[in-house]
Image (cartoon, rainbow, N blue to C red; front, side, top):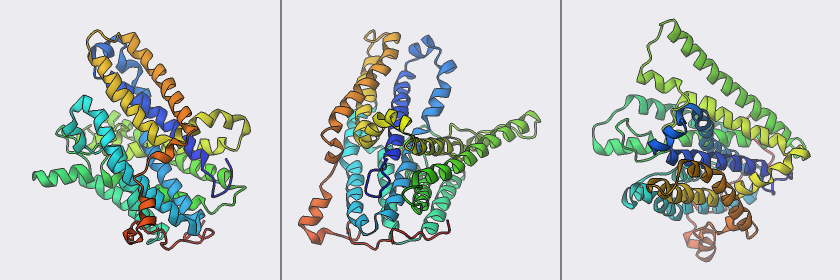
Length: 404
């Protein structure tokens, strides 16, 4: 990885690539697990639970990487960040419009188009987080955004746990911003506020690591993020151990309300232990990849992951089509796909997607995902609203507003 602010942060690209692999495996088993005959044949519950738990690191990885890169570039790009800000807004708006429609079409095979187009997907939440962070960056200090992120997460979690509105409008708003109520109805799979809180916190980390000089940047970033990741994971493990000890001593009784706080499976919305263990695990993976970028003998093995990460938007759309359209049709058509053939579909599909992404990367396909916002602003300057303006106030590339 070239240690300049102008180059792509290929260590973060590799993290996106690894996360995409986890997404593919998770979505494969999501479709695969719907078929009771297949799950019974392979004794699914006995051998795949741990794999699925590890795959749940994919979502926090995407949000952490997005925030880290945004915070880092904001500090290192200086006045050039204005133009980059416009391109990032363009990508976010693409996710909310064209990207959302494409995903809804792919999901429609499973749920129908009308429910799908009304549903909130992870790309919608990530786009919301990007727009919100880009709005706050030139207007608030790093520490302010950090505490705002913590407050948003805590407030959304408490609200989800203890607020149960009966009014349909309030119910919908809770589902979108805090998380769905436990009535089986999902409107937003990834509620906005808790994930926005995580995005703001990771943006703070990105600004923090930007203070290091080029020669030490990735080594220092790997160390700092690794220490934080280890602390989070150990805190999560300690929480689980304390809870099990209290249960063994009959000092606490397991309830649904308590279970939300002490299970790593609580993803929608993300629970405290989920973020400690899997968010910490995701941060540990990012740290390891940043370290690996400095080791020449390892980095060459990460190039495919970097390629996938560089094209993560296309990779996400492609795998959604492969698993929720093609694979879903294959496994739900009686007699068309045997259990062993279904399992063989996973490696074949992974290799096929990798081949397509690698081939299209030669033509810089990641530049095609745009709604044309930069061109619109250049052609009609009057459309350059404060949200789209590329001349907003920028920080000094050598200044960070917190103590190192």
